[in-house]
Length: 479
Length: 125
Image (tube, rainbow over all chains, first blue to last red; front, side, top):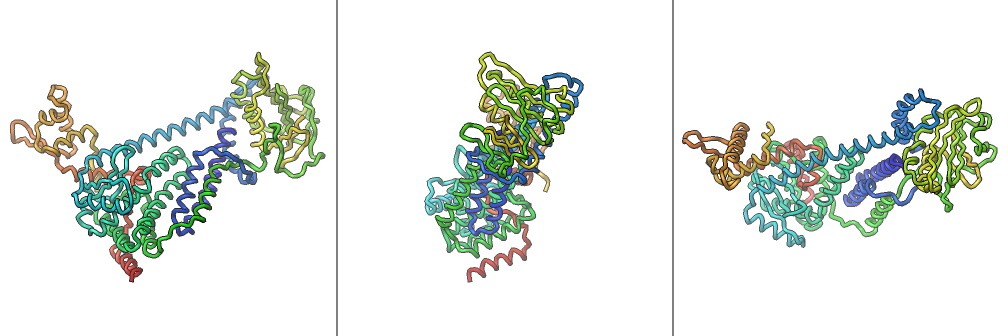
């Protein structure tokens, strides 16, 4: 699959799964279910697809048009430049154009990633230094934290540190080193012991759930896919759901303290409101009130429930299946046992729809031999692929075929001729990629795969077993 | 609230010395950090202290022949302000993804907060 196809597959799959996850998030009472689904949205973006499923071709048209549009836009410039040398037989520019476009996209992508990583790591380094400088909280708070850690059956006991300022208490759990619960000194003085107990429980549950590691992964993937809105949305949803999951777990551990826990949240909110509202928040300001209200309502209104094994299995199954699946257009045929492409989705073939064209002697072709303007003829041997395009097909359609990596490896014998037919026979210009290698080895499988993949992506169904198929818009016959 | 002036890592090192022992001379700060007070180290510390003074983090007592430097804010206040500064500057949640936090400010009015407290109590009764 080409770079753009892989990208397209990931984008479609992640977006579809995200829509499903959002529906579940709004309806499900257990935040864990929605969390698992949103996590699989991000997982889809980094795990390679193992299987392919077909989706209606119409669904893919807008995205494909966008991807092709970019390539065509760039290729048009190169085409304009090459018009002057139209008599030339060998034209490398179109393939180079597509390849260059992919390179530009990749470079922009990487530069974006590097800038974001650098910026974020600088800030994280800063927080690490500040937390390192913070002073230890009085022994009684650390003892309280140790006691709660034992109650929660935890091996690790984070230290409690305190500092000035007005911010929400947070957990700092570095990769190396001790985890710390950072508390504003003013909040420690202000809240009751019961509220502090609830706050510490909340932070300890974060440690027990290993949320710092989950968040690192989320941060990594969403930064890699920085340009993809669904990834950004997934990150936000996961952070919000993480809080809901932690709330649920706190209540589950100690159901009779739900009221105190809800009050502790409000106490913290009151403390933030009294200060300068510096809030290490992950939710946009206009939804913050709603989110806190939602948390409180969930805490006091819903009894803590552990998700049943059955429903959890279903969620994990959906998530796992999504990870393994890829998406292909319905028009893309599957590969048969002989390595050739067989049509699995087009309607029953009708012979009268297709004109057979003999391209064994391309020089003798004339336009009359290609009555249907949408016919593409392909001839394949071990040594050569000849594509004959009708006169009405645009030159841009041919450009991606002249991709340099078909011709540049130089190991196998290969020849790809792209023949465009004019009214009076062969047009003077023939795009030809011809490289004869000394060893005379056949075309590499990957090259043939790529070429046929390209044809499939352009709605061309190719069948090499002698049958002829029609696909809406275009028909292909292999001689 | 105006964002607090940024402090570089080396400036932070100087402040750390001043927090541990207030009212220090340049030479004393230099020896605490480098272990000696060579001319180049002395000049570095001097310029860093001057920069911190300009930023308002350090004050200089000129009453003595040898000037004494002290941190204006204490360590705890400084850290709090810096964390607040980071929190205010980073609002997209990308960095706080690495932190766990308890509550988000709900921007509630006093009345709304009271209503929520009644809701909590109502569920209990």
